[in-house]
Length: 275
Image (cartoon, rainbow, N blue to C red; front, top):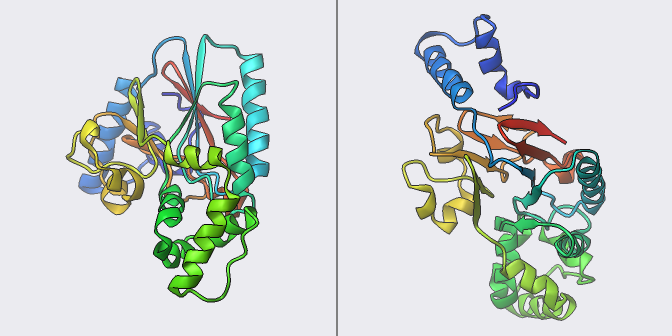
């Protein structure tokens, strides 16, 4: 794993290795062990493989278009035997162009090796089509912008009849390809020493036995866990101002819809960088 790119969250390891005091007592000793472990292990992906992992898009088609250009340029300048683009979910809601984002992703897979993971926001959209009562919950996480992007205008009423009519309108406005896309998303992906999931994993549970609930929704129990998960977990779901690099996980959700920063992590061999 390259240390050339080091967000502030990873500086405790860097500062320790430079000999500068950072954490006191047992906690400093714990981070010392973790820092040495990650440097010794050098997590990697298989030879000849390059992974582009993309964080939560949330309706920012403009940022996605720009990122596609950067990835394509990187592949042209630095060709590789095989590359895969892994999207970590939450393609819709909050940002203004959810429909266009889905269109872009569907088109992208026609010429590129891509893998789309499911996010909790896609769960809401899929559920709403068959269970309109979920609208009240979905509104709390930014569904209005998604509905508007499909030309569906919600009313101020939130009664069962209004919910049913709104779900009907969305079903009619949403192309079949979009519905298949949302319903066909994967829950996780493993490559080399890395495990990719939208939100994270439940500590103490083998990666292959993780529940959908945890993979899409978990926060504190995962984020504050300092032990090894078996692989380095690459995730989104919890927005941060910049990528968070920990000895056991990497968070690449940089709140694109609000910050204008859509993060792409690049993994090749035992090297890591951001595009």
